[in-house]
Length: 429
Image (cartoon, rainbow, N blue to C red; front, side):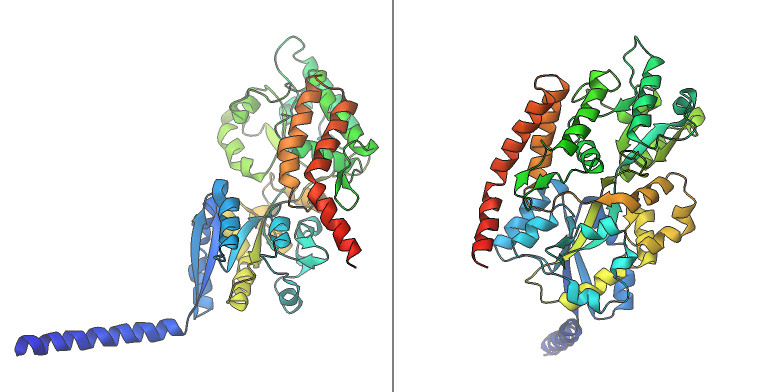
């Protein structure tokens, strides 16, 4: 009898504990948030403070590898199993907006004190605007600028980085003159990186696409001028030809294999690691040169955005989380953890960024950045086609004119369905 009495006591105690836990969880809302790569690992360090400030809201973070993220998200949408919110590379936002998988955030923004357009860099904010609706909030930002060897520039007579295309070309000619018979170059422009071609095209005034983003505009005079300008560097032996065999760009930079590299903030820690000792003060960053007198020149608006899925039952709770992640203090904490640059301009007033000489070029560049065409097919165009024809033109396998005509033809084929949808939409108005 004593045993049964003892067991009954334990059972009763467990029921009380279980019920109390159940009652506690009934008052909580759990947000499912998917993040990619290292961001998922480090955002979990910011979650406890949010949960402390917002009792009753829990955040469950799931990590997804970048390489599998897009496929996993599409699969989740198709199976009606999306999270409440997630991190999206800002070039992915158009795809999920077109699928009607994510919601416009304008109503939330209208009543928010924290997330306002004026608190963000204009070009970065614009990446998430589709058909005059805001589908995402920039979480962190990146863009591409010049990493350069100060000592080499000074030797070539440039105490300041080039401000325009003419100066950049002149500087590169002078750097190459130091090594006329050596396999050393001035600038690194691998054709398997599409970004410089698009950046310089935009700087020359190209719209990249035309006819409501349904056809390629690469054969247009503006993009052609930029394309010809860039492909001339390897042809003049100012840059390695095509897809370079450089296995370590940091070592190559340290060895003066090239003195200019167009890249993003993710490379700051790496350059600091490699450029040390007597090389520590021999490098710097600078905004992109302009087409003529406009400085800084154009660069691309990159980074990741925060989006809310249509099927979420916790949209208000998710928005509170977004507001927390968008606070300058939180953005600075995230920067300390992962070196991801803040999207909120107020965070840039902190001495951590303001006094960092390598960061000033990024801040200046963010004043002149533009999004790539906001269509779901963009990555297919950029990564497959732009790179393909840049390589052919650089190696003189095709003339610039023929390469760009062929590029437009391929892009028009990729955008065939989009043209049909646009025309169908016009007919139904």
